[in-house]
Length: 242
Image 1 (spheres, one colour):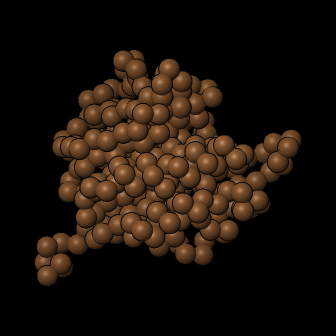
Image 2 (cartoon, helix red, strand yellow):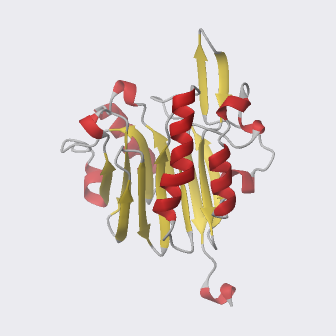
């Protein structure tokens, strides 16, 4: 499983698509979740490995601005129960007995942006996840944190109380932190005249049930100031469950 923020400001160009395809091949990805992209009939048309081996689930933003989500699932994996929001930010589906989710939560630390982000975490996501499978994993660009160790500066304004409540209510486990509880690593690095240099781990994945994280790591992507997150999950065998 992998997550990549495609940075909508420069649109979903062919070089981006080809780099994503190369990443998928080199890391043997089964499901990849993309944020900040717009999928049309030409998307991945030049990426023959993707076209021949993956089905593309897309949730574009209204007006087809380049800030939607897409999930690419290996074509021999059956997908059912696809759920989305109406703003291009959420994709949920069932596959191989688990529920998988791709989130791109509203960004910004101003009052309106934080209110909308909390609305997603407190109402929309719980409604969409209410019939989730007993095992699963969801994540993506959450544009917020739940722990001060996941930001270099201004952690308070990046906190999401509602997402923290969601984690508790749905018994979600931070996949990276369960393997690396004290490791200092971030998923987005930035530099601006107003804010200076900073970093935070706003891109995360959570799992639940009997699903277990065997690997969780971040990789650089040339076109993004976000790092991609790659995870390997396992389920206990039937014998282990006995």
